[in-house]
Length: 202
Image (cartoon, rainbow, N blue to C red):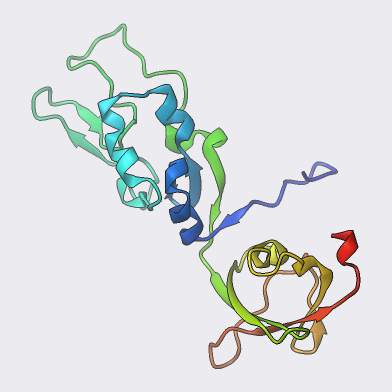
């Protein structure tokens, strides 16, 4: 949590992280990662939400106008009314115009800030991690916009990643820095992990 009134740093997500959480009903839309489980539970059995279930783990930005960000619409052939094409959207309007009808109070799922789990990275970067103690190497993917988070992304490969000193290009790589830029030839930069003896503090 940010202190001193500053905005908290957003969590950055890779496309594969959204895809890996399809069972938790995550989708990405317009550069945001959304957790739709609460919406699907609240409206369980609603046939309008079937496309959302089928889209879990994928990007649904094509459901929205790329210029305005508004949901795509169509004209209902029977009523002639403009309807929302986005599943689970405010498309539950009565078939005929009525003065006593108002859209539902909660915001639609694509505008609900409670469902947002992070921002989708536009700059995924690969990093080659080389453990100088064991000689093992592994390539991880990081979000170019994110300051920090490299240690957390390396934990599945090395559960003691925080117990190493990280260096890249001969300079220390601090945990709160963004990932280093790719090498001149476009290959992933090599980050050397040097053993330190503070494993017990991890």
